[in-house]
Length: 126
Image (tube, rainbow, N blue to C red; front, side, top):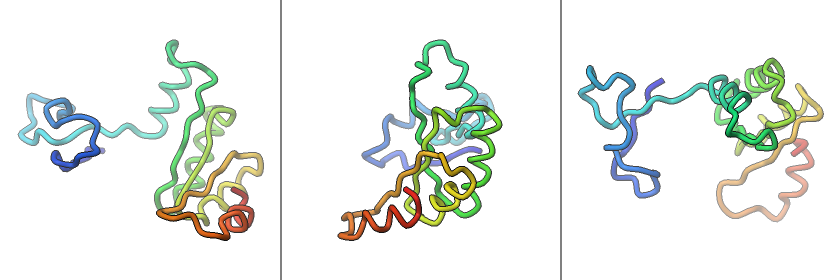
């Protein structure tokens, strides 16, 4: 669950001196950071006193076999009212809708939005 990153990437929010290995005393790799699990994020946001209960949590599904575990976790933690799903892979959106017909979903497009984007979104329930 460690993420390595390119310290020279212009769009990264902060420099490598601000992100360290979880155990600095053993780290010889200064450009690593800890990546929280979805469960850790949802649990923290769900219970944190400084986070508004109205805050919507956007879950971007990024790979195969991610829809079902994400929907099941959201349901297990009773966070459905706060979570929304999106993906560039529109089949994942369709899968979310099959698992939870009331889920809020959105289809993402990589570059220019195609002329038939409405039809594509409707086809997968986005």
